[in-house]
Image (cartoon, rainbow, N blue to C red; front, side, top):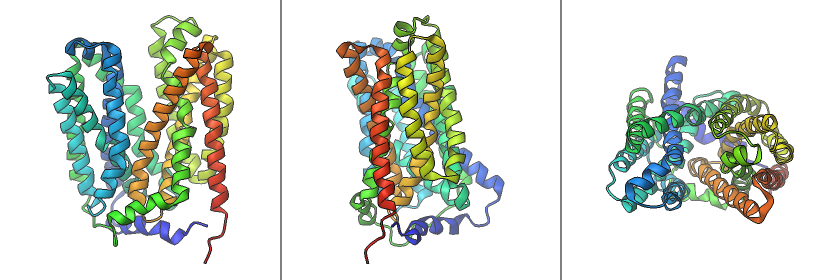
Length: 408
């Protein structure tokens, strides 16, 4: 059974620095942290809408230009655990400022890149702080909240990411198409710089947790529960990306809707993510495991229905919205990882975002395999259903181990 006293120590250390903060100050800190998430989300997704412009500028094909998306994702996967471990002895405020500073500088340099290979390298570098930022921001938010409200606090920070899919990415994409794609990255760099200023202004200085070290952070990888929780994120949520990666072609080729409806369907997905984040955070504060398991089971059914009804425009819209709502389990998974990692929470919380990027790659790949095999774009829902089922199995194994008494 998990040692609850061990789980509480890191957050208790942080609470010593947040005692006396007013509700207004805590809100301003959460807004500052969410602003960083908004910038990261906008920067991550805006490139998808500007690939033709980037390809034209550098004289490469659109598929080749797509490598910059993979480069960013690779940066996220690699950067999260390495940064979290190496920065174990840094105060969290200092680390957040450094991470967002690198993100802002990376986007500024991306906007000024003179050739395709330097642009690709800069996208990789810009992705490095992504996971570590979200992980540390989640820990800071949870440390300022009462125990029964901490998932909601994590959800409010992640709200920056979900709002980015609905507001930030469309605005940045429009700006990039209207002026130049470089303008979109300049905007994201500005959001990053604003976040640095807000964190420096509102987040109080903190002390490094007693006993913090690289070795202690790396101990997270020696915990089976941490690996199982990674598996839930990397496998169980791959279905969302299997559907989302090919949704434009599903809208036009399977449902027979006009191209103009693609933006509407994408907006429905973004609305669903925001609804899921808000509602799921509240649900998880009442039942963390119930929210994760319940949403995985819900996705098994929903994604099967998606495949069965993808030819129907109305049902497609409903299913896409509800698929976005599946984000409801993400703050809960983030919080569970913080719990099972005990005193190695920073690395575990940061690497959670590596797991979600693996889910992105896995879902998109398997969805492409099914489409290439001739089953059609609507079949991506069946891929999602299978991945959700595997994620649920991994989660149930993890919960079963929770209930086993510890030896000694």
